[in-house]
Image: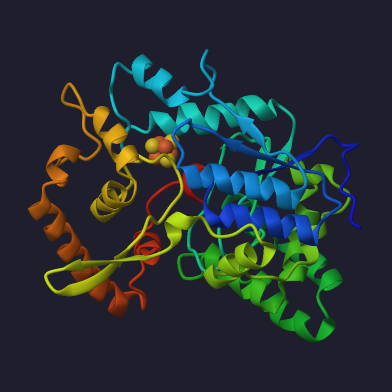
Amino acid sequence: MTKVNKDKNVRHVLGISGGKDSAALAIYMKSLYPGMDIEFYTCDTGKELDETYQLILNLETYLGVKIRKLYAKTADHDNPFDFYHQVYGGFLPSSNARWCTQKLKIEPFENYIGSTPVISYVGIRGDEEREGYISTKPHVQSIFPFRKNIWSEEVVNQALKNVNTELLYKLYKEFLPSQLFERASEIIKTPLSFTFNLNEKRNLLLNLGSKEFNNVIFQISKGSNLPIALLDDFPLLNNEDVLVRDDIFRILRESGVGVPAYYEEIPYEVNGKTGNYNRSRSGCFFCFFQRKIEWVWLYEQNPTKFFLAMEYEKEGYTWMQDERLEELINPERIKQIKEDFLIKQQTAAKNYRSNKLIDILEAEDEGCAACFI
Ligand code: SF4
């Protein structure tokens, strides 16, 4: 069993957003690295879906540990969102003014970790093209175990810069089998330029072997201020797994933790045609990142929560820029939204080879690591 040194005071943390990917990551890390002392936490806005609270309970049973609930600093744990909603004078958050993520997710996390060096495990999958920072504090380092490249962008950028050519050459000679070294040497010695960028260099080196790449990056990081520099060894260096969407659902189902019910597609009828809708992500039930079809889903599948969301729309503040929830639930409007979504699904099936809402949204890349992974 791998023991990762606590003695050097590096904390390993994994945030459970309530979404499928972070839940699967917790299961994956616990089963592959049972000796790692990982702190699991979740930032509770007080407005999560019931399915999210159930997922946390299921995970606690599976992991055999309590998941620490982090709350924003307020007098009322049950209602951190409402507390800040008042502080902001009734102003509802939006993608351009996301006080909710800052106040209810980022700040509680940063208060929790304090100034100790932290390695934060993030569930961005191998089939996604995005970074997922939970915090940009220099003593917090993100690691992405589901990706071929487990390192964050700035770590790789730093390691592969031209000034490190000699060091890269030396380390690759040590770690890479000799039959591959000639190719590695060509890649390393080709300087970064307008015609050969960092991503290309990184991918070419990763394709020669991710274990070797990891070991080289780990050695180079030793001379840095990164939390990982404080470790003697890091068990993920030799992990070559790349996990994609199907793996996530499989992990959740096989572990018994289960997939949150809101991901399940529900058929609907509109103008003689059949479509499917679901909720695509975790987060607050009224999250402004929701698509119109998801608001319709909330109205039809969880009207209590929908009407609670509606109560926030007052004094000119609305969850969507162009429409009030009161207008959205007009039967004709619902029909139109369902019809529009059906067309979008058909187009998406051609463009993204999928008509699922989660695929459509991910292809359009909205949301944030703190709330939806
Ligand atoms: S889920 Fe949405 S509303 Fe809730 S904190 Fe995150 S971004 Fe804000």
